[in-house]
Image (cartoon, rainbow, N blue to C red; front, top):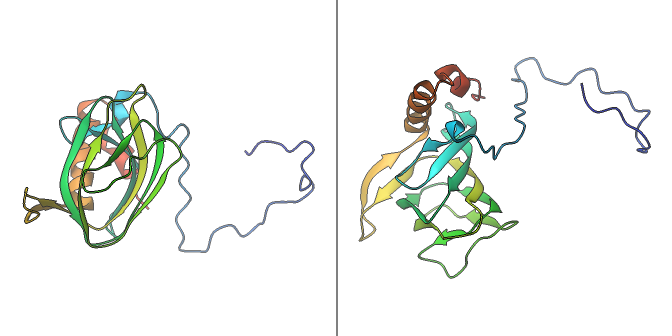
Length: 177
């Protein structure tokens, strides 16, 4: 049940009766997305973890909170599709760019960009929400492709971790839309 309105100008409005179309899945609501409970963060690399928020197996997309509690490195990678990021806390960036993202910063990554994602030392953990479409193509130091990582790899990685920490694979499946 939503919070009851008090003095809001819209307080007498009734919610619409037809919320979802017949084939539409329900919304996904998660309280405290950048939770402090480390069990929800799946190790993505030796120094960076990912908390899955939303996963679309059929469209090869996911949304997560990427976190590094200290200096971190995801890996060199290339995106054939767009990526969106919003920084919650800490500092991060790409070795290939001149900016450093901090709390409140938004980043749009155009399709066709390769980069090396790093988290900087900071008083707060680096936490950023990413919306990823399609695979990450892992790159070598020359920018040549070595391997790939897509939503199906992400799902398997999350399920394995959630099982290991007692949250269960069903907690990952509950994020599917």
